[in-house]
Amino acid sequence: MPVQILIPASEVKDRQGSALVLDHEGRCSRCNQTPANFFEVHRLHYRVGFKHNHLYGKKYRISKSYLLKIRVCETCFKSDYLTHPELLDRGTSQLAKIAHMHSIAWTVGGLLAACGFLLLTPIIPANGILSTIKQMWQVPVVVGVLVLFLTWLSQKKYQSKVLHEIEKTNPGFQPLPRAEVHTYVMKTEDDPSATALEIILENESWAEACAKNNQWKYDQAPLPEEETLKKG
Ligand SMILES: [Zn+2]
Image: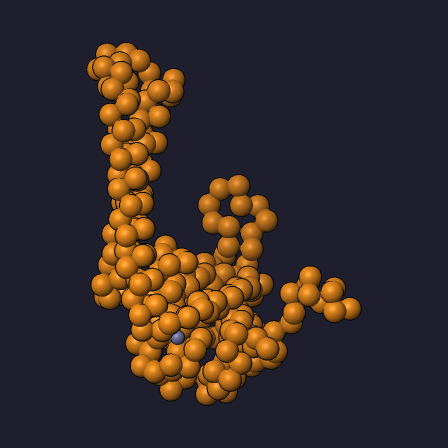
């Protein structure tokens, strides 16, 4: 049964710069393997006081970003590269660097192509030097599409290499899911014990031990609505 850990506001309200780390005896939070020197990362926000009239400016009275890191082993980390390369921890590992490079290339390729198409629209007026630039709209589009295509090829190449490595070390490996994370918008900051973050983990024993060590509340995760209906 999946377990939900309830993290109080006091644990996340001042986390800018220092991540909230979920750990239990250095074991992988998904498969219990050691060593587990990698992390699954979630980029989250601690938010207080939703503003209803937010036509301009801030939507929340307080909004602070922070990182949640959950310990995983190398195999689980690698399996994330196959399923969610864009969410990989931007740490110092070789794979993280490759994933980061690909993510930059996706952005650059997309921006170049978008610039080319923008030149085609009347938003850029066709007068003076701009008319010459407008006529060359194909150049950024072609370069952008080429960058996207090469990035896609390179990512596929690395993914098949990683898949091969996993199959070699763990034959028949089935990827285990990332944690499910929900953040709550706090009304006020009066109660530091109020739940600001909920983390659902599939590995029951690991999640319970981790919550107990940190004196966090935990409970069996409620079944998704569809399953509850089927069972009812
Ligand atoms: Zn693992």
